[in-house]
Length: 464
Image (tube, rainbow, N blue to C red):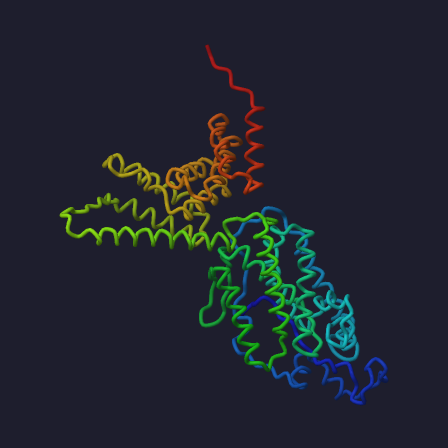
């Protein structure tokens, strides 16, 4: 069953009007059973009023379960928002039974439309839902994507962002039509729009129940872009009771706010965000251009009678297999097997060098991104000695990399606080501070704090 970033439900603005044109709240309470049944199902009302529901793509065939980005702080605001939505839904169910005049009054009182657009409605409409599946569909997406966005924005910042995202989505809906809109998906679309900027390189763990059934890892950028594309398809086809305008208003707001915060430096950039992904693409293009230029220069000197010989060291099968297995585990985010696979690679390289001294030590180092991911995952798993070796391997091959300053700080952190190598870490920290040049204030402050720790650490006495 597919979970997309939420669903706002539309209801015609005239829902709260009686057939004689008066307000339903002024009508006599006794009404024929036949008329009451017309108002029993929210989506059915929309269909009767001309909003025929057509399923373009099966909804709820993909359930997101979680992401692979570790949180830096406990989640609070997002969980409170989930609980508040659940509480509001329970109150509506108990008080109205989701039908009849009472439910119509709730929708009319707390929903947003061109006719009813007081400022507080732009907050309250996001906590009213048309049924259990509408609620669950929204809250599952919020539960999965919200914690990481709160982690980056901070608790107060995330709360303000969520409320503003819902309000902007409500305004976008008003531009699209007169129907009353309810549901949290405008705000949740803002959350997923921000997630697309901040964490496109993360992996979303999903349960798929469609042509394939099972658990799968899907890159976040593809998961969210699929939801946006499906909304665009649904909006183009029309005939639905979903407020696609609210969705797109939320997406645009969330994407724009996250981009602005990264560009202005209010949020520090990290290796999960959109800018890092673009930087990696540019580096690959630069490398391909350099290789192409070198090949063209060689072709431009055909008659000089020189033979160009490129010696490529033969890589033993055991090392190649160990590198491939470790790379696959990193790509699949298989954290439990990383320490053992890394130890296997180190042992294979060491055994190969004993047999053939010409085998380079650098074979234990993967590509820059994979090596950095490996070191970070080992650090998170508590494999501190292995993480330190992985960080050293990164610096041995990628000393000029843009991330080298941060890597020096992380390696020094391990050396100072866990490996009792305080004095050896001093030069790393000094070079890291010079490399960062206050461009990354968080790691620069950490480096200075570690230097202060080294200065406060008494020197160990030497024996006579």
